[in-house]
Length: 362
Image (cartoon, rainbow, N blue to C red; front, side):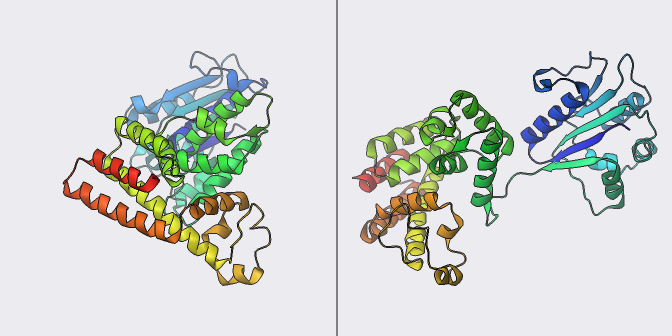
């Protein structure tokens, strides 16, 4: 019996990558290097339907026609429906044509040697509905959703995804490199996969991905530029801070957004110092988190440092320790005044930010 896959969700790049990989594997089952093979409707083994170039009715008609046509010159045929966003309409049809296709799929009323792959970026399947449950019984459903920024475990989950992806590629990654990628890469697992693949190829026979390698190779996304900027400020590196500010503004970043990012980083220093006090960390060193008293862990289960990798927690604390209580209090006051100056329009925003950097980094 042929295989049936539906790949759907929010993460368009990850969905496209996964659906294409499955379609290639079905089209070239005996080729260990199928990832290097090109899919084409010119091939007898594959029929590609471009869902974004047709109306819904045209897609359904084309799909039914392909299901009614058995493989020719090859043992199997794969129907690959690409960029089809209306998966919910296919599963919950509102007309006879749609109902006909759904029944064909549910009853497997087509040649046993036909495989189906449906790629549905932004597609939604409500698994509580009866038809969705029926589809789930005959098809493999894979969903790729973006991580939610408001998820309490967002940083932890994103870091874990990065480490798992690196491990699958036979490499290791330094904790500070994980932190950089976590902060610098957008909230899209497909983009993360591509950036990590780039790092793996660059490393060759080397095993470990370092922070320097990440900073050298990773795309200069708005997220990575903001990270490099705020990191330079927190290290009180004036020249790099000003350079990164110029780069951000030249790349079209809005000054108020830069201001907010910097204010958030200063707030993290306050939160980190509080977390250190809760865990009674005084003489900070790389081993500080190896033997935290269990009673403190029970007393402060939501402590932000306990949710981090020990080395990352150490580096975060190390940066926070670079600011004493008087310095961070003054920095928060200066940031508040700068924010007010930008919003009120009393001075050009760029000049406000430059003056703030001079005051923070001197």
